[in-house]
Length: 380
Image (cartoon, rainbow, N blue to C red; front, top):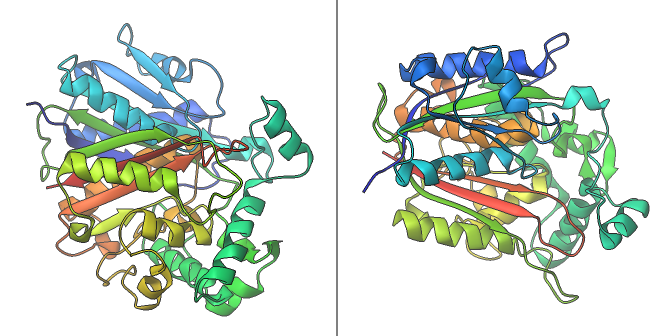
C-alpha cells in the first residue's frame, strides 16, 4: 500500500509584511520547500492551494509567475482548517496513485483586512441573527472559559499560563510573529477582550504568512516522516443541552485519526493544536486524549505540555505566538511537526520525538460545534 511521505517543507516568518503581495509571500515558501525536498518545480504533478480570504483562483495566480502551467490546481477553502484540509485531500490522491509528487501550500494576508475580529459567516438566518447581536469568536470562547471556571478546579491564572508557555516557545522560534516572553502578570493585566480572556490570550489578527509542503509516495532527503492518519470531519447540530466544554468535533476527528494510524494518544510525543484562545488549548488537551476529562488543568500545572515536559504542546508558539494566517496555519503546523520529528527544530526541539499530532478547527456557524476539524498523526 502506498504511504504519504513529507519530502520537504518551509514557511515564511509569520507577521506583518508591508509591501509584499500574497503571491510573492507564497512563492517564497514554495521555492524554499522545493529546495528542502530536493525537487524541481517541473516534478510537481498537482498543487493544492489553501486560502480563505484571498479571492478566486489564487493558486493559479501564484503558480503563473513561477512558470508552472497546465497541471491540476485545487483551491481549497475550509475556514481555519483550510491548510489541514488541503493536506488531507493531497493524501487521498497520493494513496490512490493519481500522483506521486504534489505541492501543498497555504497563504493568507490578514493585514489587508484592517484589524479587528474576523466576522462570522453570514449566509443563513440563524447565523445572521447571532452576528447582528454582536457575536464574535472571542465572545464564544469567553463563554466557554467562564463555564470552565465554574465547572472545573481552575482559575483565570490557568488560562494565562497557556499564553505564558506558548509565548516562551515562540521566543525560540524565528518564524513566530511574537518572539517576546511574557509574565503571568503581563497576560492578566493586558486589555480585556471578552471576560475572562485578555488581549494576550487571543491570537493576533494582524498577521500574514505562507507555508508549503512537498508530499510524495517516496521519502525525501531528510529523515522519513510519514502521515500515518488523516481525518477531516464536520460539526454536528447542537442541542440546548449540549456541553460547550465538550469539543466533540475534535474528539471525533482524533479518535478516527488515532484508529487509522494505529497510535495510542499516550504514545504522542509532540502536538501542534489550534490555540486561537487560551481556553481552546485546555479543551483540546482532553479532546485529543492527552488528558482525561476534567484533568486538563492538572496536565498544564504539572508542566507536561511545556518544552521538556511529557508531551510538549505548541513548541512553535502556537497560534498565540506564531500567529494565525488562516489558510497557512494547518500547513505550518505540519511543517513544524516534520521538523520536530526530523530533529531540525533548533532551540525548540523536542528530544526524541517520534509521533506528532496536528489539530486544526475552523468555522463558526450558529448551532454547530465548528464547521470543520482536522487531525493528522505523523510518525517516523
